[in-house]
Image (cartoon, rainbow, N blue to C red; front, top):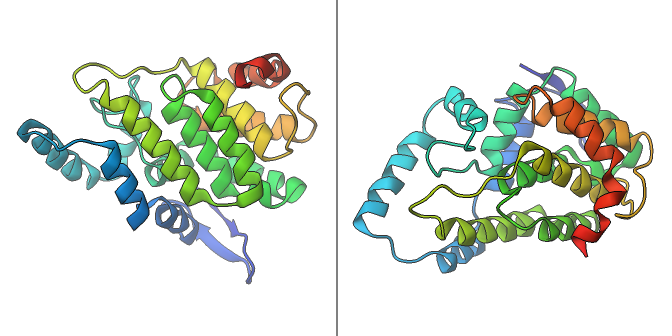
Length: 247
């Protein structure tokens, strides 16, 4: 399990990921606020009896240990049935699944680029790419990354993404929801992190050290995919070629 020194305004604190204070920050940010619950309520309809049963089953499933999260993250469909990982679940699962140097790379990126490279923000767009790639249009994810660089308001970006994802998933209540291919998801992750961290334009090459560090972070977040490293390298190298996709 990863251990690191948590960055903050106070003294450095030793943190054990999976149960440490930084993961609790992820969980706190990911919890629905009153306004978020209202947004989600507007995005759904009154559940039928069968949907109510499935919801209870999901609540029980949510109480399972972390091994359940890993199984869901590693599942080809992205979860059990039509279930989807929430941001806090993704944070916990990623930090236990990723290589030991994942946190070190996060720290190096933050030292190089400051607040836009906050670890919570990095995990946010890795989550959006993995959970939304191929289902949620990529252009809103890019717009979100550009906004967060300025506003630093994670909650509203989580709200918007979850509402958009719920609205699309509702159309696939009785069939498998669409999932992007790993290369498509990784492309979205690289491009979103490029907008967020160095703030490089879509038509420009990713500068160093961002290019190398972003590639390594994306590889770690897709550690269950054997070819993730090559896919990340390709995504970084072809970043400028996807500029028209986000216009």
